[in-house]
Length: 176
Image 1 (cartoon, rainbow, N blue to C red):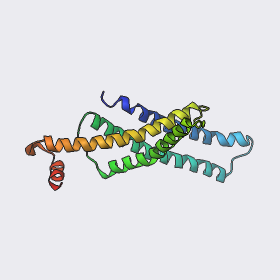
Image 2: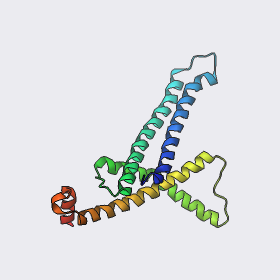
Image 3: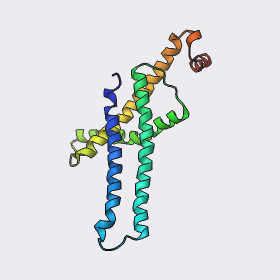
Image 4: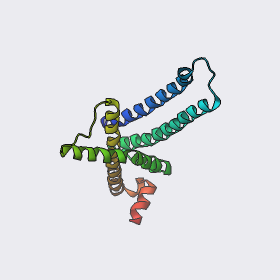
């Protein structure tokens, strides 16, 4: 159960990504019939509509992978378990930060402007507002869990006897 409540905003972001993809596919399927009902759509129109869908689907798959790595890190650190950083896991966490740090920066600036009396937050579309807050939370969660992972890694090296230690952890402790 540990780490599950802190992962809810990550699941909200994942749900919004996939919901946006479904909306994009539905819009592309409906587009030819909406413009001209009696004319067969031309090849460039169909191709360009589906290029956007393919690009969106690729982005959703990449971000799903990145956020999945954040969920795994969150679960491991919350349970104080070892989380081995492979190249793909590091890539996923870097992508998560690249995706979410601008949202965190934007939320901080919006709150600072709100404190000075400027109205910078719009609740016109609540879905976008909730998603923006959840994306900013993903950045904070990723940074927090990376620091927790580093702390957990250090304590596991110190507390683990040499005969039962993970070889990689012992090698790293000896080199420091």
